[in-house]
Image 1 (tube, rainbow, N blue to C red):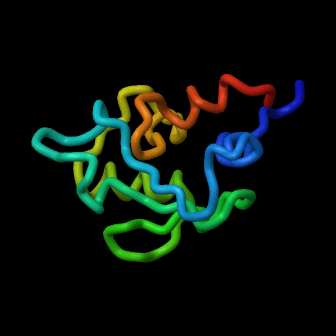
Image 2: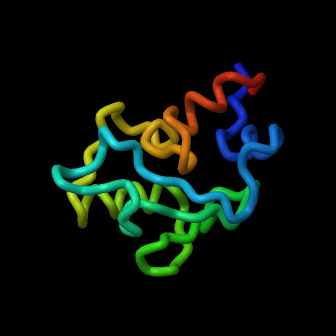
Length: 109
């Protein structure tokens, strides 16, 4: 079976994500009292095709893979992952109500 295309390239192909798009952690994953607008829980897309260093964390300005940043948020800030280890279910585009994963599922991958 062929591997599914990744979420960010799929959404980029549909012009839903570009370099500079801001992503935020899904509200259900945030620790108690946290807000999605907190820069600890936001990242900006800096690469549409690569996995490594594809986002820039608003909190420290450094580049990470989204998976690496997801792990940092869990370890340092108490973010939980209600959907298990599915990174793209834990993030959404700012202003959207669905995860990157759910958005990408609408398109052939």
